[in-house]
Image (cartoon, rainbow, N blue to C red):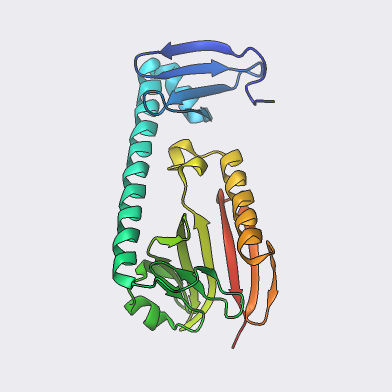
Length: 241
């Protein structure tokens, strides 16, 4: 059952702008926004702070919240289009027509149309490769560095990827399917969508390597959904070598 319950109360609406404010029986308030004409509706509960601002400022604050969500959604769509264009550019440069794409269970490498993320790569080697898109220290004192990979294409699927290094050694690689069905930005984020992405990760692993998790000579593969960060991913953990 929806958190709104049956027959929520309509408190305010602006059909032209594309939003309305609803309240459930517990007097919790929810802003329902249509992010683009004919697009899906997203529902977000008002925080106590937003509720108080709405009570003080009226519908102007609701419109401000709605416009912010729409702007975030548009930004998310532009960023996805840019990622996919970059993926196509890298794939054309990589020229890997004969490489079998996916996770190589023999080595732990991630083989994509854009190139290979190999657990044997050092941080320096990865940062010098075309697959490096940015990064930062998460704990410089202890040598932990989080590197963002360029957008990847594996088969027909788009992925976002990142790699964690401890000093020069690759420790962990993360893969997440990049698909609008699972959200385009925080504006249309929802836990059910992220759980659906987690399920798709598991299905893809079964389709491509036969299992959704397991141990291998180089380490292990797992799927995880982190409710605190609101993020799901495929995790490749590499053993110390």
